[in-house]
Length: 134
Image (cartoon, rainbow, N blue to C red; front, side, top):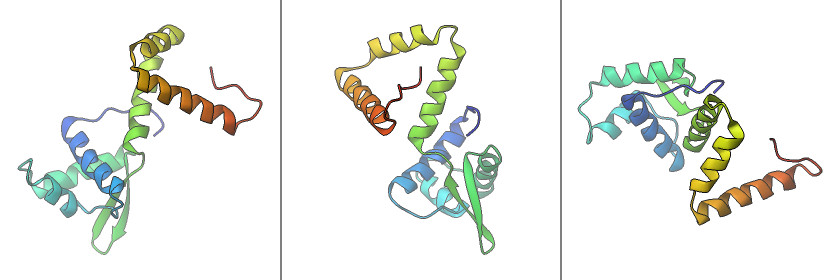
């Protein structure tokens, strides 16, 4: 995704279905698959689901491919990738990135600090001789 784009409530719900399918190792979903997955929680017309999927594809959140007469949809980014884009977008909105990052780090748990340390260690070990991005 080139720029951070927000998702509406229904779009997020549809994306959650598609991310869950991806996490479960399932194939790309048709509109019918998504409608069935949402049937227990929401009373949506099938055409509404089709419209939301089409909009998400046009916003570059989904890739779609023809399967006979139907389209199959899969997320372009993982859930984690999308959340990271949101976080970077929020960081770009601040006037002082360093201060925002410092404040963020002060607010995370010890376990999350360990995750951040490990991610930084992994990053620096992949690019020998280079410092992580500022």
